[in-house]
Length: 439
Image 1: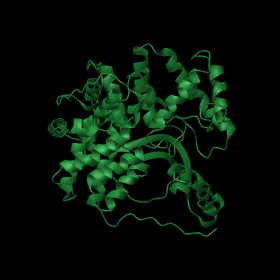
Image 2: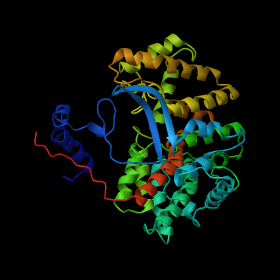
Image 3: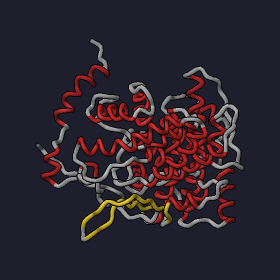
């Protein structure tokens, strides 16, 4: 009988499920935190960083008390960074400079950095044709990962080398990521969906947000409000502490002495997971299912009934989750969601999507109460940034396949900052301990 790998793997699955299962009780017995987090969601300290800080509680008489969430980039409140931008000013490049180099740029420094990014928005000759279009994939994150690893072959100084070499590579990848994502989508959309192919070159005089929109759209057109909303989303997704999965991956791989390309490929592989960067996709999929099961987008009672079914594992994917609600760190509020909500509201009203906005607002009001009624809550539950980011991308006519890649386009700035910090202060390879058990 010829061997069949798929059948063999299916048969062996039962052995893995029996021999690899470790009961929760053993984690408690040995004092080991699952996922490096305790039952309150507090993470085990694994390092120090100056890059960003998340505030979700305050200490009162030695006890942790939840508070309004705050996010700081290099000591600067992200809300203030965005609020202090003039209405016609894009902030991605300015905030990227802050994260990478530790201080806000003056006018000359910002202009120089923006010009450098603009000059780096190119790919090697025939790279788009020979690499991105050669094996198109619906999974744009996989396409980007392949492209990043291949770019190492075009870099004569691909090996780690000195700190300046890693800084050069990080800046170039920050500039190239939008092209890798958008061109990857166009290749997939042409070869797999039989749609028209168009490759628009980036404009070095435009911001990152503007370039994404003009490269993505057939007519290259966009409004100022659209670009401003996307720019804000990119800033909010740019960095979120050293403890998130993909950033920790960045630091782990960097600590091994690996090169920038391999490090960013590993970070991309981490981010693509539905428990991390892919979460906003789940929100949109859930919302589409909800719309099919309620008579009106503004029917609050029907929305509440659907949410109860979600929690009772009777609707959508039967996971018992209301996607976009709750966060591993934040409790009372996610500051990123608070900022993004105002931009989403303005854009929704501009595009005549008032009823959709009402639906989101109703869920934001109802979900925390329903969750608290159905299960024990160790900390508060509030909407996270993924709740509105998917809606924003939908309003911008961005295809689903690009939702997580947009996250990567922003987060590579944070990954780069953490890689540089790890290189500057590198001591030992990050090597956590695992306890071997026999029962």
